[in-house]
Image 1 (cartoon, helix red, strand yellow):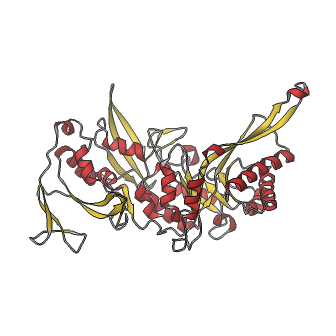
Image 2 (spheres, one colour):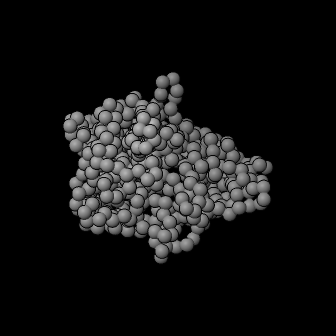
Image 3 (cartoon, rainbow, N blue to C red):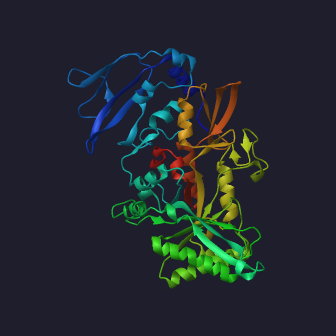
Length: 471
């Protein structure tokens, strides 16, 4: 899921011939005893010469004797690079990569475009706008965080002002009926247990919630903590009204103890769910807790009339899983790319996302259900059907067994597609992959604004720091 031919030719030339990367570093502050620097980078066809930073400007220009100038000599490609044209040398990458907060946003740096190169991604992705509190998306944003991608915890702290809700993926509500030996093996007794509390991090919860104060982009509102709960029932279990009440009170007790604002409920949309949700709200009310509920659903699912009437008033927001596109979701869709059961190419076609929202909340912009809808925005992609994260992409583009990557914008799916060949023991294997880019993310943010819905980011730790400039 990435751009077209002319930038790719330039990228290949950089890799094969060692076109120099002209750069310098400018001190912009300190963190403790460490000097913080911002790399200023220019990639061009110059074969050598003088580059300067004017004393009163951050812009590069032709130097004179009154400016601080650095003479940069051409860097010749190594034998290793010539043999492995898909690999960026460590020296080139060290000099080119921007890191940490910088003074210009991705828009100011001209990066929100369909004509993006792999070299640009590698050079820019670790640098985000220093105004972390600035909010660019007018709707609500939910960000999921998982223990298996720990970087998401740091993203939630750093960019908390941009997140209305943060949902750590911690809990499993397990239940059903188990054999009671005291009854001679003849009866089943109900058993319910809320697992996952060991992942709770009080300091992190406090940082995310209370780090947002007056002067932040959302008028001083705190970020709400709404952990995700997956319902795991014993096979064949049937829940009674008493069972539902017991499960609801388990959740409420945990929310009160930990100070949560609610939960994301990852449970099926079926008859009985309204009784369960009602039980949670009744228990929360008795404990004086203002519980916020967010319901996860599959893409394109329409609520039946009676569920709409009874459930929508009880649910605060609905999180739509508008990713992991499959051909069966759209029989008329394109057949290009590798797909497996878990997802593939494309991952989240823009027109399909629109169809999911319109099917789920047909009342249109401003309707109650539409206003409660959050569309899923994936922070991951697929490579020949295997899920890949930002770390995988960086490793791929800098690895030694990959021939130059072809990055192309698909105008129908509105996704970038990455095509490459990987050298293995049995020769080369062809790959087709998709992964979010700034253009991909911006178009889905624009769609959310048009449809009057919010965003649900799955999940923060899989992403790249500079994506947050768009939120």
